[in-house]
Length: 286
Image 1 (cartoon, rainbow, N blue to C red):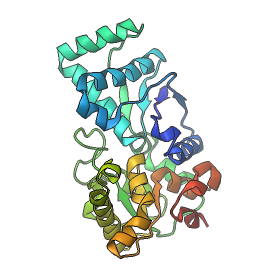
Image 2: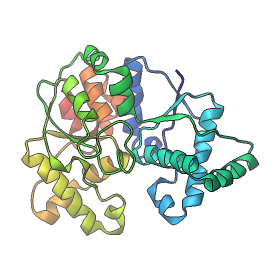
Image 3: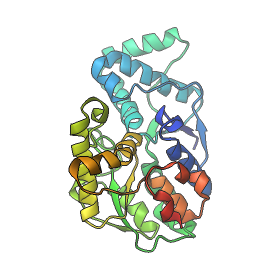
């Protein structure tokens, strides 16, 4: 099986800790991935809402490149990229006119696409292919009951669910438990983090993030895990402002699930990007 890797823009910039930790964990578990050559931005959710046809077109180019490179499956860690690829594949598979237009444009660039390549999120790969037993066997530093709030966000499994329950996802919880952690049960695990509203409507964005963090804290969580670069950014970077605005001290490490895996696997801090976090995630590795 050849896995081709689509990092998307975030994992090369604001979410580089995600890429570092993901690739380190993959190496530990003997998972080999090959980055798609000359990939382009997926357009994220904003582009899809402005011009759906163009958004499908630029995402289809990434699918075509993956097929050209001989990939059997695409691994897409960013929630927005992952969902954008899935949506595109569904659109071209269900609408002959869209498929014809997209294929016509791809041909102009010397590409073609069958749109049959499987798209996987790393959570799917780790739990359903690599397996929980392999994850347990790689643990050298058990997390000894660390209380974890697994935050999936709103778009990882919606509107299309391919590997987890839409309303009560469990894959991240299974991984955390395999590491020795204790997961909390909370209803906000799929609540929206406000997306880009933290920059366009900051007061509303702050309120939405405050409610998520406060609820996790009130249930005893010591760390929030996420699988989305934008969720991680929103929940981590505005904690100072949120604390002042709502007059409540909110201090909570918000890290990628792959970083916590790396800690449990005994991988060095810099290889996990822990030193680049704003919240005190580094303390968890001590």
